[in-house]
Length: 237
Image (tube, rainbow, N blue to C red; front, side):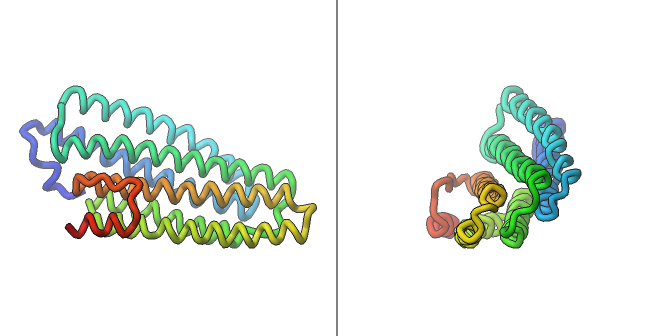
């Protein structure tokens, strides 16, 4: 985070509180990003141990969400921030929530990996899971970088990438449904892959949300429910 936004309060403790929030969000983000990587790896390789690790890590993510929420509430109550500082704390609470939800979806993918380890691998869909997993991981990584650097251009790129993830989901679902038609006995296992793909798509949605929170933080613009064209137009004004 650019120091010019931090080293500007009379109270250095206020600067420290804001910096603590930022640091802990980025730490939480890194953990969640690794959850994406591990959950995708677990389902592709039907690795039960790695899947269980993702499930266990979610407890840590949940605790981080609670602690950060408490810290943000304390700052709002005690400091009564205004302007950029208020947007920082409000954006932080929203980003925290989206990160926790990404972690929830990664946990779902990991649980599907555990089920597939018991039932046997699905006949298809792993290439699509790997591809979508890479796209979603990149989206979250870029969203966190946009937050760290206060970069609205990078945030807009993340929002654009969400459209690509949506297209990939539709394509992957068509492919897997065709496999299910050809091999009816594999339907139950293939359904786990479809569920994993939907979870990955939701992770992309939450990553886009984080990018939109960054735009609100930096520009004071609420771009939720706006199209890419509308967001780009607002940023150009």
